[in-house]
Length: 425
Image 1 (cartoon, one colour):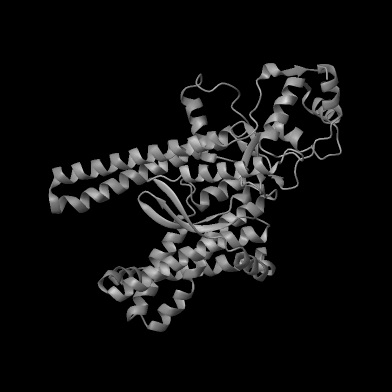
Image 2: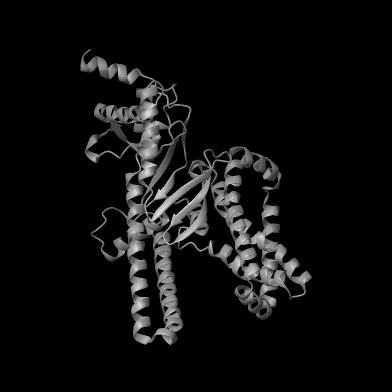
């Protein structure tokens, strides 16, 4: 078959994306929008940009390639070359995303590659140990709380949490002084640790239940090691596929809500105990330390729940990376080419605020650590120890940040073509 016949055949083809492939909403990544594709058969997530999304989202088996290109030309005022079409079909075919390309051998190899990638992502700095995929449990809980997913219920829960906080503030001296006596009672310490881990487990379960309620799949719960901390986690990657922004926000916000509401009953326990005994101590600790642990998750300067809530509210994919690029552009305008983009002020405000907060936090923690250590080991030794710990923390932070950027840049997808490959109309 000649090249002309091949091109005619390609133009009349009606490509169709496999039904198992879902496409998420467009989220801002710097100056551009990115879309997430997920293939539930292999577990792969792919990132594509506007041009590729426009084409792939129209591969429904009804439109011909020529009809898709005509729509593309009308929208972007650019024409696709045959070479670009072939490149796009090759990429989609290699990933088994089109009907007719999903051969069993290929799909098995893609699944194996995905598992291998997950294995390589586990390092001594960051690793996850999956414990369960509780689909039936999450499904049952989602059906149970579905009728309660109403603004009035969310408002009631947070009003209850604010009432508990108000109680702690009103009796601040008594509650905090009693909470600090926790370490004098071994039984109280054990009970507090058990309650804290239960709160953490329910926190992650809250994310999973809300995600399941909105149709997420492949939810995974386990234990995560992120040097030097160990914590529970709930993987709800399907959240990126939710087109309704407030659903993404509620999934991210559910964990903090569960954590703070978990502490509310301890107001009653503290009152009933009369402020004396083990349960008075435990309840005071939960109203201070437990509530604080929950609220810390709302800080958007770290990749905690608050960060994802803010990112979803702004419809941004990687807020911290976009902010970093804008700060680099501000300080070194020639480093990053192209226009600054519509969200530049948002990125700059977040970046400046986050760096200022982190700087103040590091300075405060350094001063506190020095003042605690100096009386016991001398000024010189305390300064050396604190400086060493800070330096080590900075090194680990840089390593984790670079690792995160490598993972993001390595995420597979149909790469944007060079401008020279796009023909003009």
